[in-house]
Image (tube, rainbow, N blue to C red; front, side, top):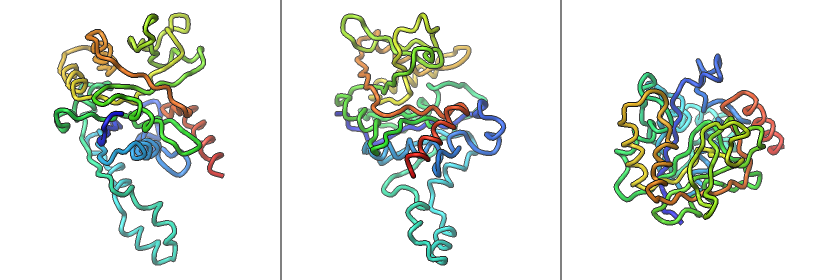
Length: 275
């Protein structure tokens, strides 16, 4: 079991697939039920033993800071109108420290960049949980697949969550390729055709990284390349250097809220289960 107390949650970006609403509301703050998307990720992190959460946000962003800070005026109002039973809903999670690192939206982009920005704040020898903030895994029993991931990864090791999707949907995701002899993680094939997909297990951007992997990610961000800096590139390179990455299949349902159909499905599922 890995010892992990810190999480990095990248939430920067313009959310162009959800325009025009993302002009005013950050994508990760769009509601699923009565909570923003990112709060499901945060609460899963807390169930995994995380007490230090670092958000990577757009420069000038304030919406997450407001959500994860106590609103004293609201608290006073709830007390005044005798709705003290709602105070727990208004309070941010207890015993968790929230930090915010800004990312320049006009600079380098891709999943490598926000993680690399946080690496200087991580101590040598530490492992961290990394979870993108616009999707989550839902378990109706209240369990956390992020906790399962942390538990399954050996101390000082690396791992990732996977989810199974219908074969006709594989071209939307990074698909995991497994070694035919050992069954271990080999690489991630980004958005392959249905015919060329090596499996129907996809990478859902939920990781445990040790410090050495974080350094690889930071070094990758320093390269000068054209286009997107994919975090899967330094991961795949590490495997070529004999680094073992444990793949942990998720038990719950992966809810991709980055597109409107996925977001509507997530709302329908959550609201139905909250009845």
